[in-house]
Length: 81
Image (cartoon, rainbow, N blue to C red):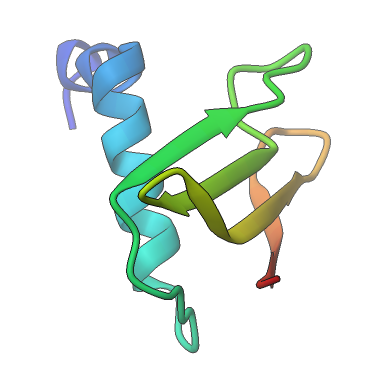
């Protein structure tokens, strides 16, 4: 992958799409029907630590993402109300 491709993947819109696709591809990941996702919790790094899934304005799930010291995703915890 070229440096230009990597840089392009890190743009906010592309990164968010990549993060959502990655979350949804994790084995056993099961989220009820939703029409919006809000990523938040950007700390010192550029990785989101929270994803709130909503359907018609009602939260249907919350994912908490944790990372190691190098910014690699290490754990995803999903809770539904």
